[in-house]
Length: 308
Image (cartoon, rainbow, N blue to C red):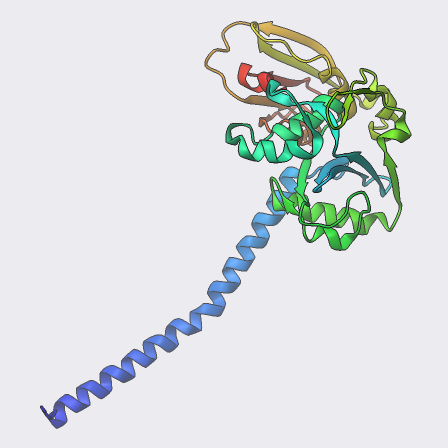
């Protein structure tokens, strides 16, 4: 066995001491590092909330349960919440022309169809003509229709964590001022589907639910909207209901050529709150203008319109 000389022993001891000092130095930075990460996380969360949530506009979340869906409508101006339960066995025409499916299966179908992750949201918009601003996956929660604050903490956001946080905020802010309804309360028409469910077939559905879901605005506050689409497409008629709910009106619908290289959708305008609201519904890119009274312009590509 080789014995270390006194000089080598001193060097080894110094090396160990230096190593310990380095470790202690690194540990001193860990709290600062964690604090910095936490601060950045909070900043990003606030930015996400500000960019996605428009407090001056009602929000509509779809809460997905194992055997059904609930609409969560909250108006911060009146601090009122409306929960509308939809039976999971209702048969609906899906977006992207994928056929008819029970409502309770459409969310999972959208997850499996990786190219159509927004299938569920667009299907609800297509059938009810109301803007869905967020989707919460609450399938791990027991029960449906009975909205409890505890159940929200078992939900997962299908988009941004800001949606889940705002849903919790809306529940607390409403102070228990919650109204529960089902589609039967609106006298919605159904047909026998021939399957294990009933087919939603009410062309007047928006007229029946408009009172509870529309925005109460003075005529001077209604925002003018112009829609542009490729000449080989067709903008769905229910977009008029959709824009009306958002607090706007379509004043011009034009079909043009020359949009072959354009993909997705784009919103241009100076009314920041309205533009943000439309973005939360359609998921478009936005361009803010200085003129707040300018007409809001929406441009849709062929692939986006095919989804509706």
